[in-house]
Image: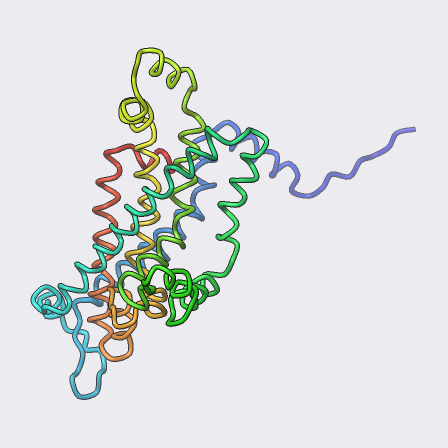
Length: 297
């Protein structure tokens, strides 16, 4: 008995379109990337463009309203006012200090998790390193506020030695940011050390190299791009942070605090300040690109 099969309307068109896309991989790739690229250009790069343009506007001193008149007064004040220069240099110094501390602390931890610990324990150790990232940012910052406060845990631990905790200030800011971003430095170093062939270390020892020479000549060249990759996170996240500074920094000011405090009073100046970390991070990324760090991300 003959049966008739009803064709679904548009099925032939869909099959034809699928065949055309299958035969043209470049067209298929372009269509797949259209949406994310459009989001990147319009929302991300567009917002940065508006940020940069508005930095050249001014503010009415009486009404605090934005005056859309082209002027370089904000950038002139940015680089000629001593307070702004000090805050910019302080922010860069804090970001570099946090990056160096993270690298110094992360290397022995990553070496233990990747080369010393038993293989069955290594996944659990990696999970333990990632565990702080699951906690709320504010919870961790306020926990450090309690630790560093007067009569807190830091004072209690240092009191038997006749010392006291650092309290709130620049040191507290560096310590808290180091704790917050340390996992971002440990993970790439752990991955690099885990991929380091064991026979290279054995060959170095067989040739009579001591531990320090093995580290400098064998391990460090392999790990250095991963350290640079981790520094991209620690440096950029520390440079733009303002909540930690506001919570444990005491009277310490960084770029993020100035941006936040000027948003309501002087929006063009706030945007001019906001362009500073963007430019610094772009320059930092260009410098790290030459080390091969971006390929390790």
